[in-house]
Length: 422
Image (cartoon, rainbow, N blue to C red):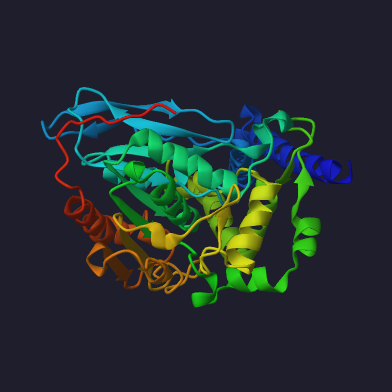
């Protein structure tokens, strides 16, 4: 009950802050105060508007907001998001473009489970949709999953990816972004040994910690300094009474958000103050640059405790992927089993989360794969976000990834649909 009370205390603080913001906005917007020439009340209303929006977004799952895409015929085609595989801890979703012939490029985009929703890849999806059939792993918020659904750790995550790849079939090209890169590599190796006919045609790993020790960052240093016992004590709580996952042990999204914000506290405070001034002057809008960024940045989700702790222990501390000793369901996963799947790594030269060297380490593990099926790219001047969603992705990396997909497609048949049941 100690940790459940802590979880509820955090939620109480968030709700209170949201209420204070809404109250300030209401008071400052009251018609009678508009007769007062002093701008104080306008600033109160602006502060309330920004504060209420800030704390409300922390528990709201963002929408994809990808409504249409322009096809080769020059027309806008409606886009709908459909669940094609449903699981307790995450679904496989497809962005269905209606009225457009199926594209030969079929892409599985593996989204991170690192505190934010899969919508963090919204711009990545939008950039791929005109040229590809896009599928995405849509992970669920652990606070909304009943305890009766059981556990979910790195092995379960890997097996989810195995099931998704089997469902989509061998004409699929997998792109893993950041955190899931090591486990996606392991899932591909698992299929190579257990079900080679279900392997994807290519695998692109973007900014992932395949070998965290290859280049140190603040993230890897933290993993080394803190023991697993300390981490469990400071990071793990039980979901409170408000949510369906009541009692489940989680790493709360609000706790992770607090650590994110503290790393760049001055910058976030300045951005908040500047937005209050813009609202006061009537220069802000619902979808301006500030709101677009923070609506996504502040929307956080809880991770199951076993997934968070096993990721730190097995991927970062014990480096099981990097040492090629990772096991799934008691079976040894040998990265060298991958002999047919083309693999490309992408890194950002200025990535301070997964530094250059961590991702390209995957190529050294692929001892059974010919060099002709290996590729790598280091993007100059790019940070972590830029290599999958920023200018570097749009202008340089995306075209390279599509060329890599085409070079390893094995002449797919246009319009072919290859779905399996699981």
